[in-house]
Amino acid sequence: MSPVFGHGRLRLYLLKLLEESPRHGYEVIRLLQDRFLGVYSPSPGTIYPRLARLESEGLVSHEVIKGKKVYSLTDAGRAELERRMDELAELEEEISASAQEFAREVQQDVRQTVRSLREELTNA
Image (cartoon, rainbow, N blue to C red; front, top):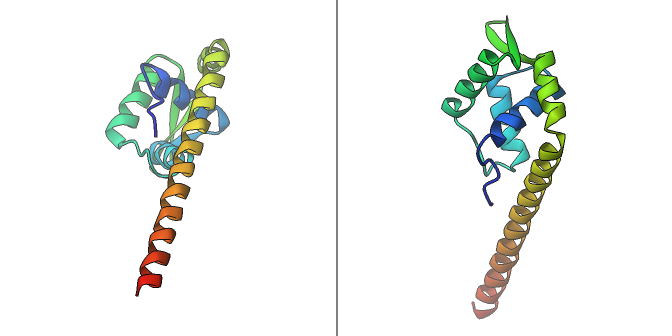
């Protein structure tokens, strides 16, 4: 899978995820894992400092709910996201293309494995 989070792009995608719904850090990590079919899994050391920075910039805020910091987009965060909609659309296309590429590679690997197994069974 090709990398898609160049300079500032993960930051942008975090804003997008928080626009969808308020989330806590591990929820953000799980969402990223899901959207990248498990191939990309950011560490807490990647996500939490970025969330803290977004908060210090006034783009997100948090409240503690059941002992967890739940981050929400602020009006300034929505404005930032709005200004960067073209860049976000491009990023989402790249994420989708990367996931499709990975799925094709897995499909090819499975097909090759099945062929190899058939050959081995035929030879046995």
